[in-house]
Amino acid sequence: MRAVTTTAPGGPENLSLIETVENPPSAGEVQIRTVASGVNPADLLQRAGLYPPPPGASDLLGLELSGIVHDVGSGVTDVAVGDRVCALVDGGAYAELVNAPAAQVIHVPGGLELRDAAAVPEAACTAWSNLVDVAGLTAGMTVLIHGGSGGVGSMAVQIAHALNAFVISTAGGPERCEQVRALGADVVVDHRSESFVDVVLEVTGGRGVDVVLDVVGAAYLAENVRALATNGHLVVIGMQKGRRAELDLGVLLTKRASVTGTTLRSRPAGEKATIVDGVRRHVLPLITDGRVRPVVDTIYPFSEARQAHERLAAGGVLGKILLTP
Ligand SMILES: NC(=O)c1ccc[n+]([C@@H]2O[C@H](COP(=O)([O-])OP(=O)(O)OC[C@H]3O[C@@H](n4cnc5c(N)ncnc54)[C@H](OP(=O)(O)O)[C@@H]3O)[C@@H](O)[C@H]2O)c1
Image (cartoon, rainbow, N blue to C red; front, side, top):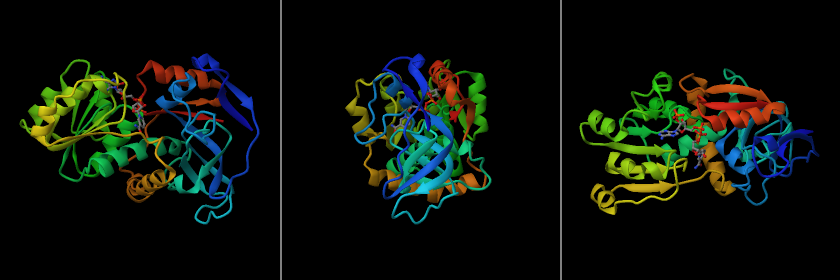
């Protein structure tokens, strides 16, 4: 089978399409013939040698895919050959045939194009688990979602809107702000020209937000805590602008607020299965009834994985980039 891999850690020029052996699915696994693979910032870090795959994961890049079930390992009962699925994997999604744990496979609803479903697993699992399981977002709460224009953010804004939360989001530039508003954000702050804390405090009458979902990291830590309401939760999932920052514990204590950091990839299989199940039960119905849709920016063939990585690194992508075999 063909797969995209790195010849050596480095830039996108090190990506190449190779012929490699396919492995049959092990017990509890589903083998999927890939229709599309999602491209994530983690893939760019792994390619550069900065984010090694967890023990036991494929060396090939790729954390999510969609396709048709080609084979199933022993013990798999709820997924059958020929099913339309998408899946979250620990690695190896940039390949024509991918083995995924059955517990991390999601059936794709009829109304969603199978190719676009490759944009669902990573974003939906990250958005759902952090907004709802970690931060406890429910109807009527106010949430600040940074980067509503990104792969995770575009999904998070739609999910939070569908949950009937009041959604404030950030994006870079007027056009992207308009696009995020169209996804369901009530207020969008242009982070290039406005202070998100000022806007949050203004639109909440000085109260702040119940939840912040942050993809920026150190550069926003102090302002994110300032933007929190009493008993608010800040969940940091990205470190695009640094990993070290000073935290004023006085502000945190006075607000009785919490700061949590999470990563999806490093979670044990059991936790991933629980998150995927939450997405199946709560996000899939929203996709089925059209309230949430994966946002796909550009689709490249496997042979142009280099261009896909260059495009994601350059910024300005709305939602996700996909690769197709
Ligand atoms: N912890 C986890 O489990 C987990 C899972 C998935 C992803 N992540 C991480 O989360 C981050 C986002 O992932 P992604 O897939 O959404 O990436 P992406 O599609 O590349 O999106 C990046 C987003 O960050 C926004 N951004 C950049 N600088 C910003 C700033 N100063 N203020 C506000 N927003 C800013 C961008 O907005 P504009 O382009 O509009 O400026 C864009 O929406 C990455 O760092 C990724 O590694 C973590």
